[in-house]
Image (tube, rainbow, N blue to C red; front, side, top):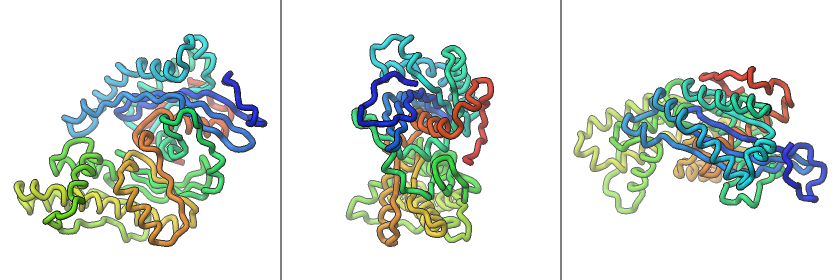
Length: 385
């Protein structure tokens, strides 16, 4: 395993390793190195580097990710990003020394865009073959779910301890990203059960389509949030009509956002272009409120029924400040003694450190079984299970 010295206070180190994470599920080319150790006291997480090459500017003019273009950019950037991540993690050490320190390669195998997944996966498999290293194919969604454990890279000298998370289970996890909106019951690490998911558009897709209708650009989540923030300034003259909260009161834990998008379109058409533009902040605010209300109500209902101790909010949409604010207020008002865990802002979008972390948990569960590069295949429709 890794050769860095360990503090003498960490008695009985069971696992100590450096993991190279690689992520290319959509339009971010990412790589990072995670130092992690498991001791009697718990596990200790220390991100050493995280490098991300974003394609947002390129896809913005199309209003969404173009798979072929995304794949092409991954091909151009993957080698550069991985080399940069290794250099940041190990500073001035030689390539031979760096390779000797890497204990495991963790790479996203799905879900995602198949053309994007194949670039990262094949690059990682090539490294595993060349370096003679074990490799693990990781579920992208599991990476998001576990990202709340990651300490900020800004505090590199203070690795977090997993021992403080021993008493959070069982957990209700709301996974909300560009292409996924799911509710999962989490009994423990790597023990998941999907209890609800979207029947059509994911929340992130709804934000993107709503922003397009409002003429606010891409990506939609940040664009809607920025426009909505203008409405929250005091002395606003106009109060927009209420938009629907689809399936908020259904008996299950599924979601549906296509109707909300349609309702927004009809609202804009009814107001007319000039009036809609004038009141765009109020409309964006109500649209954001509608999405947040549905997500929060379903999650808290699930947490109550399944008697979970905590809620994890994860995925790209977890960066939305209004969603986090409303979530905490609702939990406080309800009187439920439930903790809310949200990842650091830098880990809400796709990144490779969360993939490395998920790879670690997979490794300690399965050991060295199926760590051969020949056995890992991409799965664009991979589910969390």
